[in-house]
Length: 306
Length: 131
Image (cartoon, rainbow over all chains, first blue to last red; front, side, top):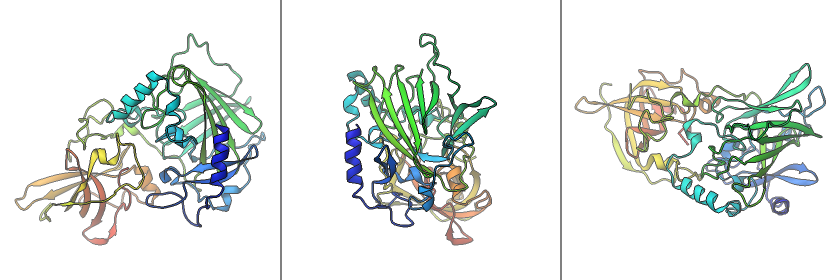
């Protein structure tokens, strides 16, 4: 994986940077597919631009503020607040995480491969579009942020908040040194049980206890309740946050998978807004796939009009 | 509500989305890119709701029959971030719109463009069609 990243980085280093003023890879734009946005552990960090909308509220990658110093909290730790855009999967977890097309699918166990094939054929099968949580490591094209929760004892919690995609729930990462609960008694949940720690300037989040209901991406890359994820979040500059993401799931993959996602800081003034997804969800109605009142679909929505 | 231009259905061969989307719930799953509706009517309701915004327009045909179009846009948050607010389009205003028909329910359509009859050169919610 690291070798792949390095080769990709070497290729990407030859690509042009964004022209001045271009937001990058937006609809109809013919921009580069990826850019080098900094260094981590002596190697280039690549930011893919496979979906320009992922970065629609971010600062311009050529803005001098991108390469500004990493802001720090009073206790000396890097401030990871953001808000950010990007930094996770959405349309294809493998490709967005730095792998070649199909490379991640090749690691699926037979039953998981069959499940993905079944999901990919489904029309509107994805839980996320019914306003259920997208979970880890998914990041949809809206801002999100880490909220550092300090008490008299110092940093005790980190909350991850998404404008949309978390069904209004907050993800809590315990920073107080507690261990995971006994796996025999842990009830699987959408966000699992997350504990965090600092490794130098990197926030390391270890999560177990996920349910198997959410999809890693829109085509339905699956996982099992055996899923164990390790995120390593490093803010390498003012504008760039790297998520080195490791999947361990012996119920789904033939071996652990390592991916890298890159988030970008939003423009000044962009804050998370209210987003009550289930308020008026009319997906599937125009195409005739769903009816008003179907599970997850607005029951009170007028068929047409008033 | 009163007089109204007719509804024009025309072939509209566009590669509408330049960004590839998953086939199982992309724009083309829900809407017909080849069927464009152009009509003039009166706004009956503007819903600044999640996950997507909707504008309802009553269109009256030559016989006086009213048909309501439910026009889908993108999220209200994305639209607000582009500088639009609740006063930019109100119920009762007369508008001309272009939209892509729903594949099964034609009147549930994806908004492509919309202008007030009183200001035909100023597009409202420009570029905020559903994804």
